Image (cartoon, rainbow, N blue to C red; front, side):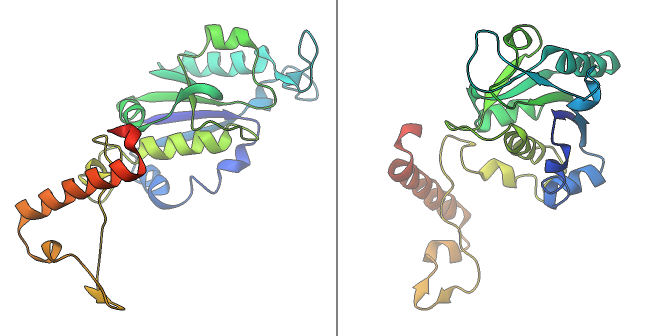
Length: 223
């Protein structure tokens, strides 16, 4: 999988993409992440990428030209399954969406800024718009990193145990059940006997019941 991210702050991705599973996925050749500085595509001598909004009002708007030129260049080099715009008013990102995107070969993710981008770009360039929550961030970089992480970890070979992702919260519309590890007793707190029994059928039953119970208490909207 290849993910191209368009941003005006490329340095913001140094931390998230140089550690843990995202770094490992790139080292193993399972994923490529390419960061593109939008200012490199500006035809303005000061590398300007924003301007005042027509009609007045506070804030600035990202201009068409740099974004269009960047996307056009990338699309001239390969086909893309999705061209995504990260925006607070996009579709709310969830696990099914991550599952779907993980099946793609090439993705473009555009990080929004200021008051947003010229609406004509949204009408003609982007195939989907994604939000990671009902709140506003300074820019789309953190949101793009979240989507990238959620998608790449689903690629075969990224996780040490590929079945691990199948038991994550939200994969089957349930939260994950409680988990425990050694020691079996600490400070008088005991691990449930069923998890120590070795009876796989009973363990699976217990895990499912606890997942349903936890979901009912914490996220009843999912049931």
